[in-house]
Length: 570
Ligand SMILES: Cc1cc2nc3c(=O)[nH]c(=O)nc-3n(C[C@H](O)[C@H](O)[C@H](O)COP(=O)(O)OP(=O)(O)OC[C@H]3O[C@@H](n4cnc5c(N)ncnc54)[C@H](O)[C@@H]3O)c2cc1C
Ligand code: SF4
Ligand code: SF4
Image 1 (cartoon, rainbow, N blue to C red):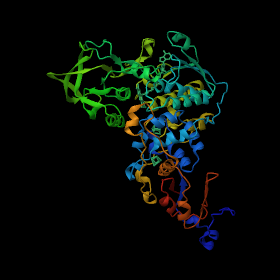
Image 2 (cartoon, protein in one colour):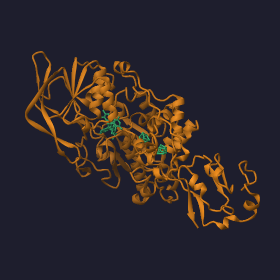
Image 3 (cartoon, rainbow, N blue to C red):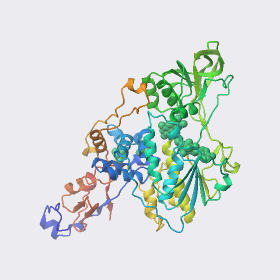
Image 4 (cartoon, rainbow, N blue to C red):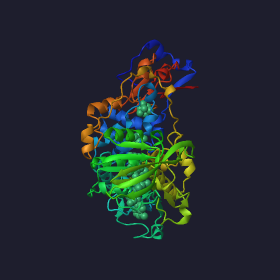
C-alpha cells in the first residue's frame, strides 16, 4: 500500500505488514468488467451503466458525452425508442426495471446544445462516402464516418433532414425541436448535406456510385394499398400522407367521424392525431388486440384518449353515400392457425359482413421500400441487401431488420465501421466479434476506436446475469413513473404527452441502477477486506491490491455487489 493513502487502515500491523501473507493464498482477486444485459439489449450499444452512474453523481454533461460516443440521437431515443434495454434490466427480477429511456431523455434535455467532444481523425485512408437518405440510419452513418475521419456527403430528397422522425412521428410523441437540435449537433461536424436532391431523378445512381463507398438508407415510405373496390375515392387518405401533412403544419380538416384501418404504430399515430383534430376515431383491425403489432403503451394511450377499436374485421369495399359519407363494408374474421410470424392468421367468416359509415377513411396497413431506382443485383427478397457489393452498404428500414429508430441508428453505426474496415482492409468477422456487446448484435464504437490503429482489441466482455449480482447490498426502491399531461389537455392539441423527469426524480431513478458489471467505487471490497490490502482511487479510476499480503480469502469478491471482483486461482 502507498503511505499517503487516507484509506489505509493496517488491521494487524504485525501480520499484514511484516509477514508475506500473500504467499498463503491459492487464489487472488481481479477486477473484471462485464457487459450489462441492458447494454447488450440496446441495439445502439448505449453505455447504460456508465451514463447512469455519471447521472447519479450529478455529472450530466459527462453522461451525455458517454451517450454521444455510441448514439447521436439520445433525445429522440429517450422519447420514442421501444426500450428493449428495460425488458432485460437486471433490476427487473429484483423489483422493477430502471427507467433507462426516461433517463436518456433527461440527460439529453439537460444539455441540449452540447457538442460531442470527439475529434474527427483524418489520415491518408480518409475517403469520400455517399449516403442516400437522411433518416436516423443515414445521419448516424454520416456522424460515425465523420468521427472515423471520412468525408460524408448526404443526399436527401426532402427539404428537411430527419426522415420519419421529421415527417412521420407526431409532435405529441416527438417534438420537432428535439429532432432539429440533434440534427444540428450532427451537422456541427464537417458533413456535407445536399437537400432536395433525389437520387435517381436529380442525380443518377451511377454518379453516386463513383464515391469511394456508398450507404443506402432510403427508408420505406410507400404506403401499402388495400386493393379493394372504392379505394380511390376522395376522403380516403394514406396514413403516411396524412401524418406528413400534419407534421408540415398544413391545414388538415377531418369530418365528425374517421375510421383508421391497421393495427401498427402508424395506425396508432394516425388515430391519435385524427382525435386531436376533433374527429371521433374508430380503429378497425383484422385480428384482436393481442395480435396488434403496435407497442402496448401506444394502444393503451390511444384507448385512454378515447379511440374506439373494432377487432376481427377487414374492409372489402368502400362506396360514397348520398349524404356524402363513406360506407365501408367489412368482412368479419376469425383467428386460425399461426402464420410464418407466429401470429394467428385471420380468416373470413363466410357470409358475415358489417358496414360502418364515416366521413373519412385513413389506411395504415404497412410501408414498402421504393425499389424502382435500385439496381436489381442489390435487391434481395423485396428489400435492399445490407452489403450487396464490397463498396455498397445499406441499412435502416430498407433492409431486412426491425423497423425502429434504434435499429436504424445501429445499422448506420455498423455500416460506418464496415466502411472504415473496407478502407483499411480489415476483417469484418474478426473485428465485429471483438467489439460486440454480448450476443444480441450491438457493438461499441468506443471499443472499435480503442484498437483501430493497433488492430488489437481485448477479448469481448461477457454479460453479467442477475444470479451473479449480490443483491444483499441493494434496497428495494419503487420505479419513478413518467408523468403525463392530463387527459383533456392531451387531446386538445399536439403538446408532448410525456412530461419527463424533474431533477429529483432523475437523481432517484439514476441511483436505482445496479451498474451491473462496472465498478462504481462503492468501497465494499475495501471495507470488507480484513487484511486492508485494497486501495481505490475514484478520481484516477484506479484500484490497487497488495498481492504480497492478500491471503486470497475471497471476501472482496463475495462482497462485490456487481460481479466486478472475481477470484482467479494461481
Ligand atoms: C408513423 C411512424 C411512426 C413510427 N414511430 C416509431 C417509434 O415511435 N419508435 C421507433 O423506434 N420507430 C418508429 N417508427 C419507425 C422508424 O421511424 C423507422 O424505422 C426509421 O425512421 C427508419 O429510419 P431510416 O433512416 O431507415 O428511414 P427514414 O426515416 O424513412 O429516412 C429515409 C430518408 O431517405 C430519403 N430518401 C428516400 N429515397 C431517397 C432518394 N432516392 N434520394 C434521396 N433521399 C431519399 C427520405 O426522404 C427520408 O428522409 C415509426 C414509423 C412510422 C412510419
Ligand atoms: S436507445 Fe433504446 S434500447 Fe438503447 S438505451 Fe435508449 S431506450 Fe434503451
Ligand atoms: S441495473 Fe443498471 S446496469 Fe444493471 S441491467 Fe439495469 S440499467 Fe443496466
